[in-house]
Length: 460
Image (tube, rainbow, N blue to C red; front, side, top):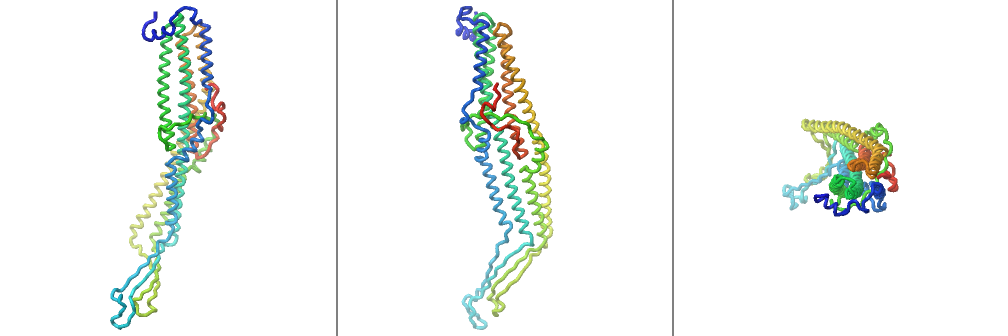
């Protein structure tokens, strides 16, 4: 008789062995087939479209709600506000003076009352011609660089949102696959219990089913933890509390052929905002070099005033001009050297960033191609074969031949194939997001999302 806690639990469910209530081998095969059909039907059920989160909607929300973008937009406003001051003349200066001993209005030597003696003067400084225009142009280039920074962050956030959405879709799909397989293994366990109670199989079959169920339970716990982590990432992108609820994801679009790599490379090199930002800063620094060269030349000053200290009225109104004397040439050379060094640094930075961008583009392109081939392999070969293998193992076991371990192995192969398909579909969608980030362009690599039943293969 069976013994042990596990066996007693099974015996309690099946107290009679070898009675009319036992299941025949043919009946077992039909029961397992019925279980498989019901599990497949449950896997194809989908929620209404209105209750699902779409990738495009998530990207729009991230780009509209992310505080980092708002901060960079404010930085653009600040940079644009610096253009007018950079190209403006310094404020004119107004100065005045008074002879204190004439405040009473008495001129002691002559006895003639001239009133209070004072002097008033207004002056305006002018830098060397062209200096103000160069300063304003440098400020405009810096503002344009700040704008490119916003565009680069938008690309980065969009790619991050798509990658997070892909993970959100994957964990939901993986949990659904896990639940389907747990249901299948639970039915297989009940079948094994009935066969064991009827004396048609060994207790080991029941124990194998129990072990597989516990393995699937542990996998479900891991997936639920991963689901919480992905939810926290998405909420962080949306500037929401980490535990804020999220709608379930819609499906992923079917992959299409990628554009040629050379076209994507040329697009990235010609218009990527990260490169354009550095180029703008180089242009701004070249303007600063020109300003530093003009500092070797004098600034001008014009002035006009009224000086009542003079007795003769014709001497009281004065006009004049002056120039600065840039005698300390070393400090001007130092400023020019600093500007040149900054320009050289930015040029090296541009070269390095261009190499990194092309490296990231190549990696994303390779990842997208690999995922695309893997999707085709799993959809057309591995998943159908795993399903056929499970069906054959089930039928053989139900007919009284084969081993229960073979059925469990077939179930594991089917589980792994379905999970891997969900994984590579998510990886492909994330890789397309990366390609869009590194090329700074929309790619015709995915089809437009349609009804849910067109987004997922029938065996999902």
